[in-house]
Length: 66
Image (cartoon, rainbow, N blue to C red):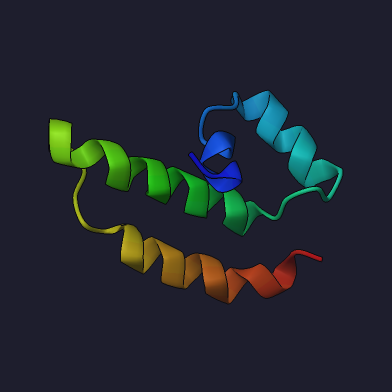
């Protein structure tokens, strides 16, 4: 498990604090969630393949977070 995927197991309050303190960027939380989906989805098959579009939007918005 990578450090990025560890973010996916944190609760929203802990994730928000990391963003607030600028320890992680919001895009890193999205990447962690996508990594987790990719790990789990082959077993449960419930997620649609829309996350690549979500990543595109997030990367476009990333410039708004400093």
